[in-house]
Image 1 (cartoon, one colour):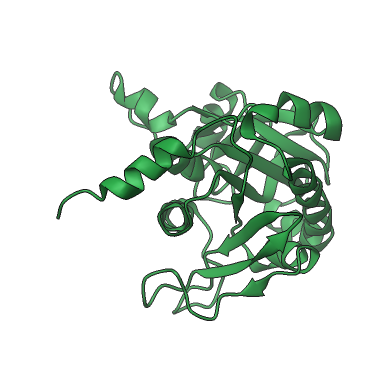
Image 2 (tube, helix red, strand yellow):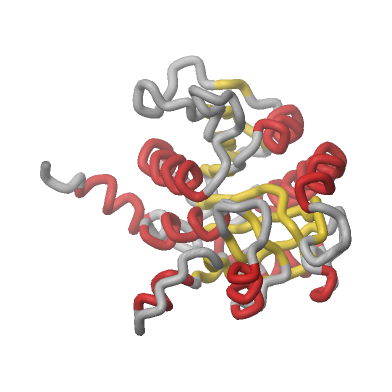
Length: 262
């Protein structure tokens, strides 16, 4: 099948840093994380999916302050009924959303674990300046760098100055817990926060040349004294409220601006 030149050319033009942002896509892994934003932006669920038939991916959309806002949630696993978290779902929905909606900007929003040794506290909101993987260990020269997959988030100096979020590096893996090998890789990544989607979203947005912002709110302290799963579940509801407020502030700031003004 021949390449779709029209789509490729559109993605090239979408990186025009001086063009006002018109369409944004918010990639978010869990329904609990998504719903506060769906309500805040008064979005509706897509009746006729823009995604391939049979996929569980959900799109909420609407207009907010002149922006075409889309929230993409990977939906529930068809067999087990749980949120489709992790890097595979995140990369697939990011790719599909970019192809279908041609956004000017991607926002990957979600919860994350934080490291108290790096100054993270429950409820802190971070903008990730860099994203990388910590569980793709390939100890062969050059392949090792490919495994880490380090990528930069979109530069947003003005947004950071205005909203005063914390800034730190994000490390991504497909497990909620942390093995000693993961810990060593996270330390090597100099990460302040860890999640299960960010670097996968970063891979796709870098591939298709769409600017991306990573907004993460801390639900659990990875190097603390409480079991990660228990602390995550205990804090999830409250932290998703904080996440929703933070992302709303980001979108409020974006409205009417170009990427170059962020």
